[in-house]
Image (cartoon, rainbow, N blue to C red; front, side):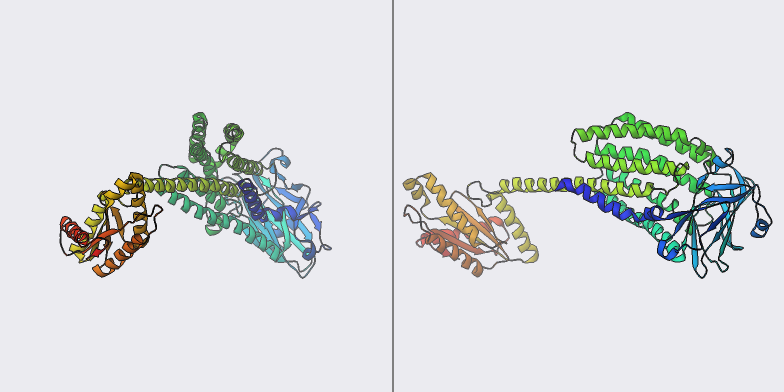
Length: 572
């Protein structure tokens, strides 16, 4: 059954996160030509939303409003999606105005989703200002950058959507212009709801896992994997809030671009050594050189990221990616070796690692404009977390099982130490402790208790006539009859060779006598194989004294009275 667990978990997780990417993959594309796109005959209700690609009119070094755009004659076009540097002769900073005219069916409320438009943007549709993200500027100082998806909703009363975008970029080293999505208002709104919900579900799920991990760490301080795992979850939550739908920016729209950029970068740099420390807890023989490399990588790039602006540390990104590649390759080789050795949990750790690497690779490609998709690190991390959670649960379960086994073993050892080897009744030293507790209850709380003393009649003759082995059998049978007839609250012990004692908390003499008589009769009527006759005599004493020795002495005196009166009887 265990071999099916991992595939089942992976299938469930992939099905669960698929909606986060399905919109991107299922949308058809429409290509504008020279700033114009004719969609009058397109059925949005039946065919769904579109990725709008192709040629936009572009006015370099001009910030034009819709009225000014009407007076311009386009002589240059910008292909979207694309890297900006590919179309501006390697230049990655500046400002511009983009223009696209789309012909649409009338009488419909449309929606547009713009992933982002460089560092800052200002968007009009049909002459109405629909959105402003940051502050478009003609220099680094003028520009106020905010990296936030835009959602626009409008109608096309004349069958036209005239889109004008002012935009600038002075902070993103590898600026990428992504295609926008156009569709019915409800469909575009659903994109935001689905995407934001995925991020929030991941954040909420990770929060629960964090709490569980921290609780486990508080209980098992020696196992730091729980602590490291919680930190990894926190980093992933931050990336969920700062990337994709950028929920944190919806809550705090004036958040500086630098804070967003540095948080995303630093969580990435700090993630690596914490992950390596986590693996070190799972696999103690992880080479120290990998851990040192991860720590140096993290410290160096975190410091650079903290004390410099984003344009500087972004230019060093290729060095970080190269160092990261070496660390990840070393980890991959190590985990593959573990899988080959069939070490416990190694296959799941390797699978989780591969998911994490693929998600990281996706983010690097998206960030550098090599692919035009969505950041996937947090989704990959979410899958990673659940796979590693499975390992932790298994490990924790094993620890709990081992602890319980140890408790049981200790209990068995303890039980053996307090019980008579032959009869299984309590030993005299334990019975003395029980009597101590009963006496304390009597003295402090006036809790009554009774004591029964038994003795096998003529036991010496049984040994002499039938041998000590038969004598031992008699002791065992008598003990078993005693155990079967007493209550769960009673304590039966072997007090001497053939002498037995029962301490009965919260029991008066009458109840004790009824139980003693039942035991006596069962022994008297027991059929022995060799036809011998075995009886017992007993004395019952409901305690009225304050000393253990007196209590035992009184019960013992009653026992001897039973013997003197003919044996095979109970005196109380």
